Amino acid sequence: MQSVASMTEIPWTYYVYPIVALIFLYHVAKAIYNVTWHPLARFPGPRSFAASQFPYAYCHASGQLATTFHSLHQKYGPVVRTAPNELSFIEADALRTIYAERRKACSVFGKNYDTFNETRNQISNSVFLAGHGDHARMRKIINPAFSDRALRDQEPHIQYLVQKLITRLEEQAKTNGEIDLNQWYNYTAFDVIADTTFGEPFNTLEDPKYQPWINLIGKTWKAIVLASTMKSIAPPVTLLRKLLPTGLILQKEVDKFDLILNRVKEKIAHGPTEKADLLSLVIKSNANSAKEKMAESEIISNATLFVAAGTETVTTLLSSLTYLLTRHERVMSKLIREVRDAFLDDCAMTFQKLAQLDYLSACIQEALRLFPPIPEGLPRLVPPGGERISGYWVPAGTAVQVSILAATLSPTNFKDPESFIPERWLKSDPRFAADKLEACQPFSVGPRNCVGQNIGLMEMRLVMAKILWRFDLRCHLQEEWMDQPSYLLWEKKPLPIELIPVR
Image 1 (cartoon, rainbow, N blue to C red):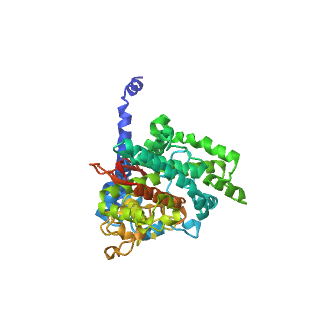
Image 2 (image 1 turned 90 degrees about the vertical axis):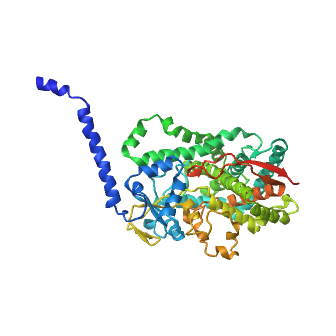
Image 3 (image 1 turned 120 degrees about the horizontal axis):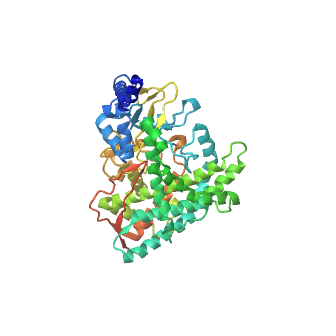
């Protein structure tokens, strides 16, 4: 009886401490293995990143992943080990190897679902997260909606909304010293992508009642990053995450994508319209597909993705280009001359004519290089059998990526990489003859490239050209606007700009 009583008196710490010690020793042993004997141990990179997933997770959760990878590549070279089982590359041939089309499905670099798809939401069934087979099926149905003909059909509607932006900016310029152009670009991109997707805008340029929904887009990407980061660091944390209230891991923010659900379902219920909006074209293409169709949940997911991605990428480019122009008077003057000399009236601006303005296109490309809308890499998994990437043999199952910002700011790929010099894209300046322009792929390459990049570029050209034709721009910011955190997309700050009417 005494022995039993004495056993019950043993403090709980008697059992807990050994368990904690074993867990600690396990992680120490695993870290030693990762640094010393792991198949990726021969690749350069900081030992802390090689030993544990925590440094990567910390950088991701704090919004510093893209800039940290840039710093690591500057120190360690074109390939860096950024996590125990992950490599980052910056060379153009790595882009082709990892992301380009492959004939055999078994040789495709698949999505790394340790990074993506942790949080179920309205983009979970989209082309962005689909597996290889589902992605090919959905792209076949979606592609006609982004054809050259579809783009021409959308032009009058985009022209109307961009002209509405100019009208609102003229009104604002009369009463306000400085205007937050990032906000107005956001309104415009949101209205344009809503109109092109659903056949009618949200009229945010007239009444910004949907501003909370626009703000939600950035919060949602951040929520997805934070949730996937929690998944990646350790099983105990994953267990803890499951025990927490949903709202505490930001699932609540993701669920708010349901705000757009009714609009999509209404469109599907009424069927395609005569107006060639993206969703009508997708519904038509889906109906005409003999075998492989898209489920309603997939149409909803892709429509939501169109709105979210279309708003953020266009806003990011327009804001960054505006900021860069105000900081580089020579480039600004040259671009203004090109735009104003090309058109006696901004009503004469068409997509076709704007595409012929070489310096405008060069400025857009240079802004995309310096401040790509998606600055982080898109992780993939090396297929069975392994693969040679940038001259390095990489074993199967390794997570690999081309870090977009690190690649576009690398002196390996570009001369004076952190300088805003659009002339490098004109291919006429011998200073930049050695630039590897193909290393700058802000819309990715291969079958998973951005399906809406052409319509986005047309919108960017039109907005920028009309603003430069109508206004002179002044920026009085003291701090560096482009110094911002990123959660897959940049978390953009306000961009106060003084607009001086010239017409």
